[in-house]
Image (cartoon, rainbow, N blue to C red):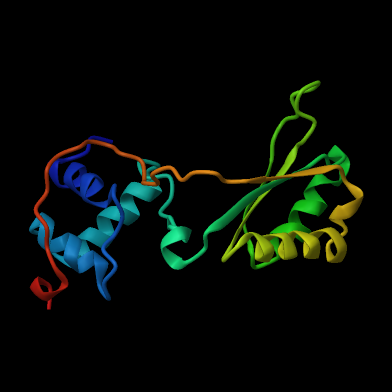
Length: 171
């Protein structure tokens, strides 16, 4: 597929996220000089063709008052990892849950989950819930609290300057 100029500009506009307004695609449409329906159609086509792998949300937890973040890692037997993953991922306070290859002898852990909380005590309480209610206490584990934050943003396709548009200009 060959991307036209509007597709490339669309990818650039959404690279830093959609505007937090009631009609984000309408704001994007104004910035591109096309209709809102065309923006939605083009995004669907870009996803269908695999140019855009997925549309997702990056939550900046700190700005929402969640100042304690912990990656909890466990050494889960490989034959139990899928079931454990389903069980742990079902908890609403688990924001990421995945499996990775162990790197012995230095790193024995293969199962990871991320938990965000208002403070360390809240996160430790959630970890205790996983340990006792979800049966995770039987696996060796480590709790890794974040010490600093890194910038979060979406992937970039083709950087180009774009003009700012407010929700008022869409109405």
